[in-house]
Length: 206
Image (cartoon, rainbow, N blue to C red; front, side):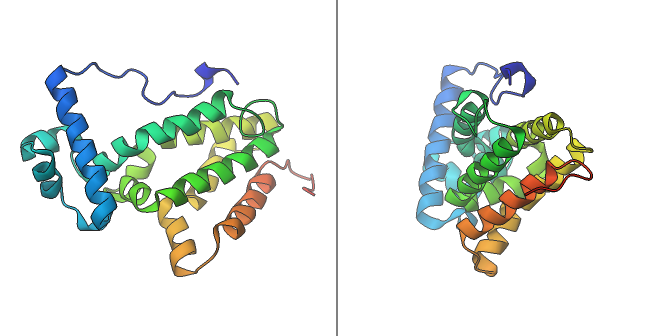
């Protein structure tokens, strides 16, 4: 898969003034520290502004809400996963069949969500439709759609959306923390779903 087929995260970034870049870094460092110390839900935007030593107006203009902070903190980690998808070793990267790649993606994304579940949850639920407005979601969906198209399955866009809905942070949190499923169990179940989604009509998936 060539790099131009997927929306690369961080492309088209506007250059910042030096002082704006310094403020942004201070804010992100303060937010990361406070989130780690208190938990995402117990930190307010005012807390972050005070810890970073910036005005509340500066903070809100740049990040809007805690969801915006969460998206910015997750950005670098999401780029690492994107890089593995685009040019890493198979089956996550190019070189494996679509079903194997989709299953590997499920495993990688669930592990990613599990490692920073509260942060991903905040990025996805800070406002109505926030999950589907992030650059990461656009990348994940286009990748899944591409693989389903390669497998020759019908309605690849709808199937990719359904698969990603099963891996939303809110759904994953419910399964892991409320229903007390274990991550390997969840990964296996959604991996089976991914393989089923690659099946063409009339073809049995073994």
